[in-house]
Amino acid sequence: DWETWELSTIDNPTFSLVEYEVAKRQLDPDVFAEQYEGKLISRRGLVFKFDETKHIIPDNQIPPEVRILNTAVSVQPGGQNPSVAVFMTYNPTQNLYYVLDEIYDEETIFTDTVDKIKVKMAGKNLIGGIITDWANREAQTKLEKAGLTVVVNDTERKLGRNPALAARTQTMQSILKIIDGMPRIVISDKCIRLIEDFKKCKWPDSPREDADRLVSEIPLLKYFQGPQALAHIFNFIGKT
Image 1 (spheres, rainbow, N blue to C red):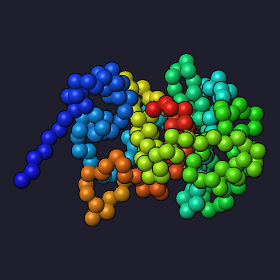
Image 2 (image 1 turned 45 degrees about the horizontal axis):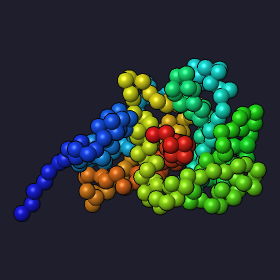
Image 3 (image 1 turned 180 degrees about the vertical axis):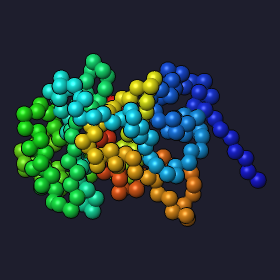
């Protein structure tokens, strides 16, 4: 008493082939298959396809001219989870994002993280303001009291909490996609904890849960703080 079928987005004759090809090129393959080709994609296991040979760069191999570019700073405040700040820049000549540094604070108050951000920002030109979680007003207030300009993603505010988390997941899956053999983002090997997050972040996998995970579901938070911090930047500037 049932039937099943699959339809691709381009089976709709009014859908833009240009948009379809752009999505195919930029999105994570699993996300593309699910969102544009109507596939049921298993979400068991690791959330991110992180290629250590492509996505990690020795800190001493980062070009000096990259280090003096304007810096974007983002913070994912903690509570029971770590507070994470990331420092990233973009080199237009290479069309490449560089994650230069991290702060990864566990079992400490958020004010300590704010103080460390100010130290690391000394002598650097900040792009915009400190980007942070729109839902954590307390953290925003502490950043502002420290004299830092704070910006949030209003689009996420309209989505709501869990859909915003899901959007951050999809953003980082897309940014990590290797295109024509080249990465879109590289992370300094000194960012040990951020790299660990990308390598270990998993989907919930209780025996009572279905094997097929929906994109609206969110990863386990234990190794999700670092990826969230980076996603704040990309979602804010609209680069996915």
